[in-house]
Image (spheres, rainbow, N blue to C red):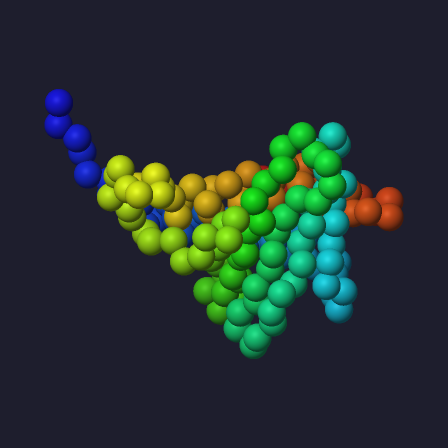
Length: 147
């Protein structure tokens, strides 16, 4: 049985990062100068976005669930590149700077496409928040994103 080597789908990863950028902008838009935006997710706790750093062309946002939800997620650090209009997960659960590809098996048992999975995971959470969430305080979240 021959095992095919994992190949990076660069155009697919770029599309995911561009979609995550658009989703994050929809959620961060009402924040203006506030640092925290919370979305109430039914039975899932709260998805919280915190702006950690802001520079002229980049911004770092922490995405995490708080409270007692059914599906807690590890905190994600996301870098938004405003000039490229992309958002990329740079840390997940304390693990920083994933490699684009891992040999498998490896000591930490990362999947060959670990970095791609982190970005897909972020996209699923942001889509869920846009679809089912509400900004705490009674204001509805942005309409569902069709990305």
